[in-house]
Length: 154
Length: 78
Image (tube, rainbow over all chains, first blue to last red; front, side, top):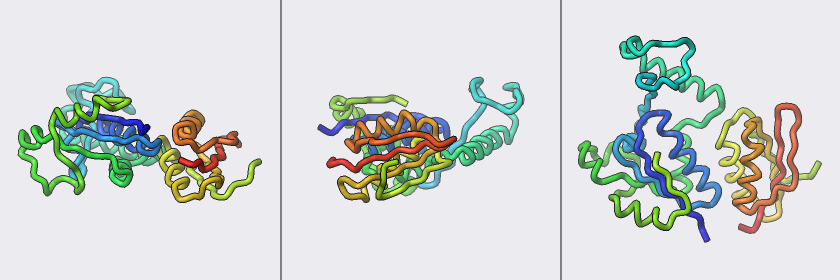
């Protein structure tokens, strides 16, 4: 019987985007049926134009080339710099981009579900999202996850 | 060293790309054909056997040559 993976993606940062797309694309390669339910900030991962960022602010575990106190991290440009640095490293280490992993998910027929309640909450419009996504609510996710072998909240 | 039908070099690519590319290559092969996969991702040492086990594509040989890992997978029935 086909194994099933259910994921809730609730984060919209560059680092928060990796676990759902990476695990979903790999699970699809392993023969799983996969559904990802995008809720709250996770909805940003369904945008046509991804502009994901990583912030060192409030994240004391983020490795930095030199220690940067929080009071400096609030300065304009710091978030841009941290994101640029992370993207350079991702490229250099041969790690797939989020766009690449998301494309593989779409090609592998991973079902991408936008949480209707959060779409309404943020007044997002359909034009901003990639094609082929579906809509659903809590019951839609729970119906699938109740039969899933693995369920993850990210 | 086992002979093979298709060779896939994933040198320089990191997790999960060697697994994803192996799946793609195998999907374009005939049952019984052999795929030789080369990887520099050290995690592939654990990931390729897991991929083999879960997808029913037997791993018949694996080893390393310096920094490079290599694996020979046979395309299974699944």
